[in-house]
Length: 203
Image (cartoon, rainbow, N blue to C red; front, side, top):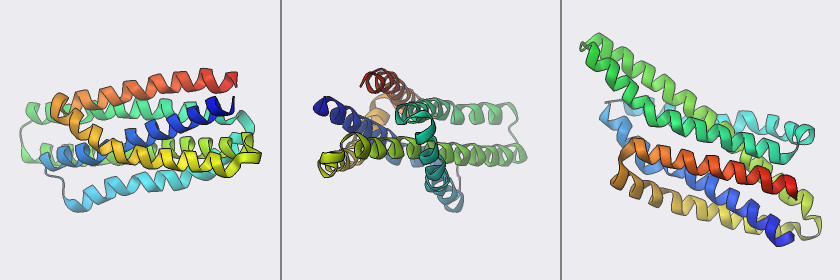
């Protein structure tokens, strides 16, 4: 049971961190195509750590009330929905710009795009905070006599996720394009959320 549980937590760490870091090679390319300034690009990506920071404390409180598996499952489900939204956000703006092809409309569309991306990044950060708080807390609670070993496994998995995420993101972007790449990541995260819920609640 120890092996199964630490393996499940490690897989959650790998998949959640790999899913987020697929953004690294994909999203900046699409932002650049829409002529968004570096200042606004910085604000978009700054929203992620702000979301992590704001929600970490709230996620920790909810762990005690509803259980880690529910918090992590909600976080992964939210992440999946946000990635699916990201697959459409540029298409929606492009469609609006084509209907009203004037400079004022384009400027408005860019503002809406920046706002949408910033809000999305904030909530992706929030979802990552839920997942991260969940697997670290779970590891310390269910492996009290082997806490150091459990945490080292998870830390290794986090690093592995950060390593493979950009590689997968680049490959998906080259082979499938922006929209399909994000939908693929959304599907994988949703499947993992379902497996997580069934497995962790059973153990």
